[in-house]
Image (cartoon, rainbow, N blue to C red; front, side, top):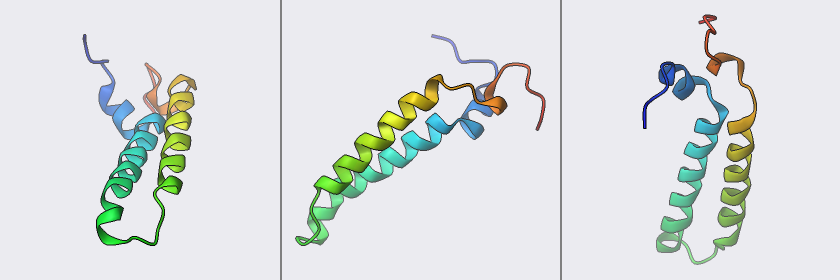
Length: 74
């Protein structure tokens, strides 16, 4: 396995990366929330995580201008 030559641009600009970070945050909230509150159900966070991960999967296959090879528009 080899990193892309423009991995820094992908990390900074790719929506799939941003959405996966949001999914990680939602998963963390879902895991920690029961320790602090019994009144908020966990299912909304699970549903939001599913939606965000699905969006990240779609975003992974959509052409994103700042992550395309040869893009020098910094």
